[in-house]
Image (cartoon, rainbow, N blue to C red; front, side):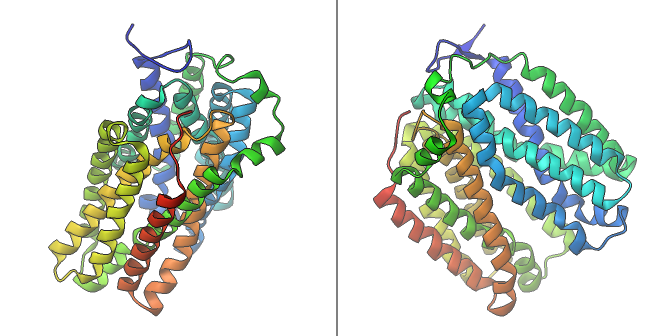
Length: 394
């Protein structure tokens, strides 16, 4: 059977990789499906959009609990953590499927959010521990392709199913698939030998000391600022297109589809080229281009130019953020799950900050200011990263 070389005596076969990508695709799908279904959910439960948007708040907020997943992963093993997160996922989807009231659905979706927060760093740590650092950009890039594929394949399928068969059918199907994932987890190589004994016995205090190392803190701060900055655009671009260029709902849907294709292209570029370019150079160079496109975006004089710059921005962002995972994974082999989980929490925290600020800035100052501020923050963080971020090889 074809296998990939790794840092341990255990290897991942291509079927194992396919299982991991499938799992990552599923949790990405559930994370993203609430956005296109928000109006549908509000109508189904007879609540207003403001109340329905609590689903977005709870799923983004759940990402702040990712350090819990990292600590569990380092203490009990990646596979065990993936297994129990899968159990939580299945429970949450069953609760959502049986929900007759929004409050119960919100509770079930909160369980799903917790499962996703725990599973994401465990999956990344599992793959990182079994891939040599020189190949890790390719390995984690393959895993992260699932994010773009969830928008291109999963979201249209879910919205069609909800429209024709109802919301309960969607979540019953997700519950069945979640149960299958739990069973598939047991076919993955165990990681008892991957996690060294001293990591198993490490105290939580020691793990937090690990995260507080200057090189790791710098990387986490860098990621937080970058995500807060780009969220200023992701939250506001639809309103910008509508108010400035008179974009219709259909045209906004077309733009969303194009962004999904661009995300896939950016992930593929990271998968193919990050290891060759060098992970630190790929991250800093990618975000530098993000900053440039953001500064140019307010100067768009036509729909075509705006769309071109927006797609260029999203392409470079996707390349840069996917390249960040292998970079961070190499900073420390001891407590790798905790470090990757802290990165996930930094991403979530940055998104929360950006999403809270973006609407207020758009209304009080204007969409163009969002983009200029985002560009300045991105390039400022790149300058900080040049001085402080170093590439490890763990």
